[in-house]
Length: 349
Image (cartoon, rainbow, N blue to C red; front, top):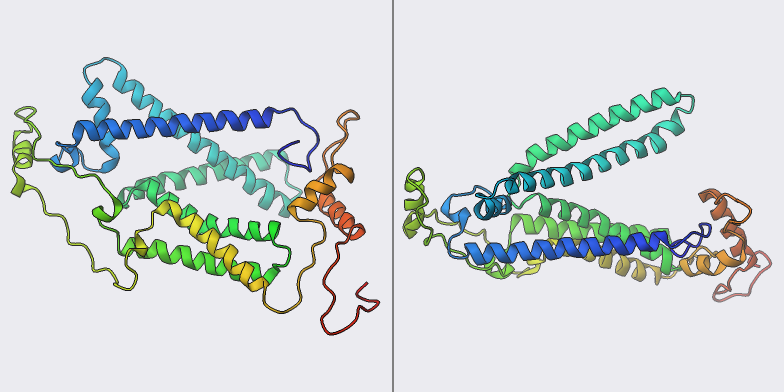
């Protein structure tokens, strides 16, 4: 397969699926950007949040739909149905995946004597537990000041960035051993976590983040019911004054103003850089044994790791593939640096 050199030959369906996925993601991003531009064009001089029409920034989109299509029958309900169906489909898939992974990786290896019926009941119970946890977290997410999306991206960036750096070190730097990977992980995680916590304690100002200015002083009176709210919104002094910004450490400057979307890249760079520097320190180096990325690609076609699709061979499991690659690496052992200050002994050979 072109996506994985260790799997048997396969049709180009995975590549087509990835291409279709990228097209869908592009359409979603373009739609989101277009909605943001439309909302700023409509509400730049009458911000619903400043006017008191909505209570949170995540209510902008529903407010826009009701404002534009409120008089069109069926459109607000269609928008609500699409929002719920998309959210529930994604959440249900993730919950079922977590339950299946927990059963296969944690429950089945430790309790191999369980019957399929009991495993099914355990999987359903785990789905119920994970679903309840998701609902609880969703209820508590209303207390987040920065929003759910920013919080989720922050957590994923802090954790996933150093992990990606560890995989990069293992795939492309053969001299980086266990100490280098662990040291890089520690530094990358500490760096990304430091920036995330600092940005939470000392949030950047709107001018630093480039937030476009909005006003709530030009909002018209909609009806007599909300006349009091609208009157207070149209008068400038009646608007609540923004809270004072916390004092920022002068030594850091705008370091905490890094966008939360870059936390993952920061952790990855910190892990790779630290691991690469630690690998240059004197000491025993790890000689490649044929399991680096380019060794796998080079050895897979010639070592028979791919099953023969014409004879119906099953793909090899992870243990068999790793053992085969190690044996191939021993047969084609690349030259290692001999010990400095001495000769190559028989044990080194």
